[in-house]
Length: 160
Length: 142
Image 1 (cartoon, helix red, strand yellow):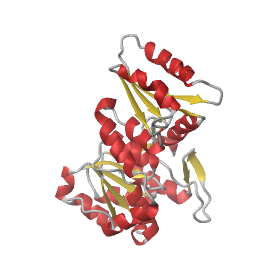
Image 2: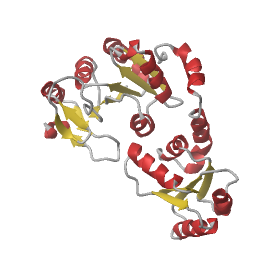
Image 3: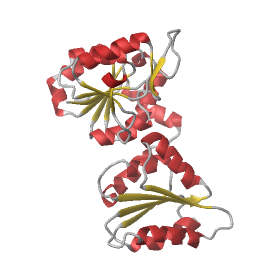
């Protein structure tokens, strides 16, 4: 079962690997991203970051959806990580029973020429991003901005 | 309540605290004690003793993480481990501190496994790459 779907443009790093995994009690991480699977160095970083004792699968978004919809996924406690709101929306539309979507770090690095606005000190969004975030809110799944479990969780719908 | 005490030569402990906070957020139950030049290790021990003695009914659990096995800090603090509710681990590094401080279980129960996992985090990159390259795109989940 999915314990949480998190949007974090750093994918796996300290907060995710050491803090969230323990807090959620997961035994598997699925990183869902169409580009990372072809990038050897990023793949290596992901393997380095994954904590001991937790299985790591790195898949394209489509393959991650297939994995999550496999009945055997019900027996695992899975943390799904995506890099951006667009991939999160794709997964949220095709996988049922996601209890919570979380957005941690996103958008601080300039990727293209789109203007960005600050949503929180960890989240910077373009107009397109905000449209996507609204669509995620509309799925009805609880959607929170919270970098680490000890920080205050804010409902994304209240930030938009 | 669980309290974590980092103690070191120089400012390592304070820096470790800062690094920890960057990753895990603020935690008022993490304390750092730094032995600067000219300070006697017993002074550090006395300060930590005050913290531990405040807990008169021994309701808290203390985990002391020191920097160096055989170093003055660890030597000075060793006596504190005779208390049931005090554990001391040495060899402070960020991986170790993270492994031992992010769960809810009793410190006693997690120390062994935490140390083993932290040890695996000390590696030459090329050695890791050689081990990991067999795994391709990650593992099969089942």
